[in-house]
Length: 250
Length: 314
Image (cartoon, rainbow over all chains, first blue to last red; front, side, top):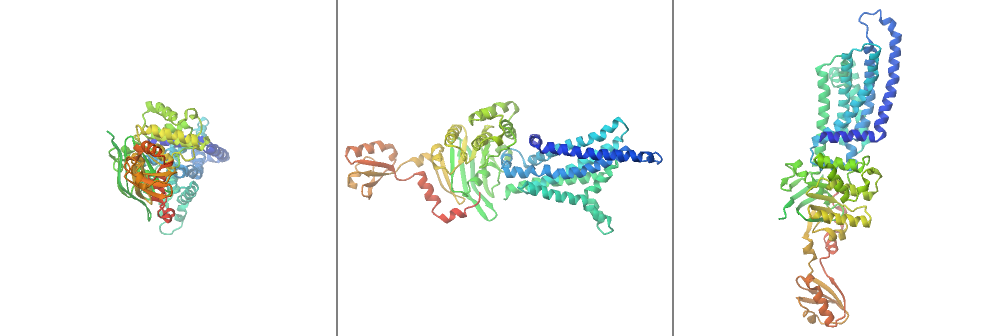
């Protein structure tokens, strides 16, 4: 049942131009960036030979590209998640789901998975360009995989937060605006930790940037995994509660 | 052998401080078509949403086909088809895609999916519209798609919130005959503002005002005529009217107009008119003096006109 809801959500993205426009735009911007990184690598190549343990192609092209694509995904996420529940409420289609023999959890998970499927497609699309380097050089597949995992964890968290914002409002635009606000806050909050003020560690701890940094270097910490999984689970649970609360009290 | 499909007792629902539904009980048996009537904001939609599990009642108990809706929601909801006042349609899907989705949500088995969908389409006159995008259909056809999704999984109970809104008179008639047809095998609850619609299709009428049930009678009871208004050309003594078979009392209201009462007069209308003609009274008009649904409705719902505006939100 979760899958039916997810697949309809996923299909709907491609029935409107939205899905296609996002995929196309993302590809063009990333291609531009990708070529830039390759050019940069060429200019450095001569110097790199003289350095011991010099950073390789993966460090100089793949990691920065993945780092950059995360910012793009952050900008795309609210556009996709804003409609998830807001639109259903606005159009009255939520009543179809609520009067059907399915649980709140199934509705929310279906919606979440539908959006996540789209992001997984985007991540696969993003990975194609760096993968094309395999033809010419050796890639550090471990680092590459860690980078992919980092992106997946990031979008899982973006989607969960967006879904919750969407459950709060009937207006999709309101949901998008509040998702942007919170995502950017979680992204930059560790700026505060660079100062010596007390609580710096705390801000580092709740920041998304901080937790996705190591994965770009190919290191997957349990604490980073836990952060993203708990973040996503937390907002999914809040969405379920929110829908339930709306059924109980208007 | 009519089994009880819905047994809802003492429902209450609050929206913040508004007591939108106040102690309403609804019962629906197989083969019943229950008409919920009431002015705007009386609580009809809220009642229906509670019966479908879309809203939780603040207090009260709902049994669907003997299953408690609050305890075993998923089991109970399988027996319900619901059309909200605004049809829950995805405008980017085609009619077929949408109906498949609706059927899947109600756990329809895969091998029955096509049959059920075609049946629902045929019943709602959508045979030729399967490949059309819902967003491109006219309002009347969208309404039909809304009804089709409510009946696609062959539920025992069909709940329709103002099903004929936005339809032209011919479509309205088609939908009414569809409802009558469905009523033979299902239990149906429908809400409407159109009184003739209720008279045409319903077997029971419940009137709601300000969240309270103020009237609940079967159509058969409603159609019983116990009082007749007569208009005669001749001036007749009221005593003479008492001689009409079956009449227990008679009075003159204005000149030439009389009110006669007796039990079950609807069975003896022919003999009454025949008697009047035989007496050469010059019978000009004979009409039921009470129990007209419209009269009852207006009497019950407009006794406090101010309440009309203050009634709870839907």
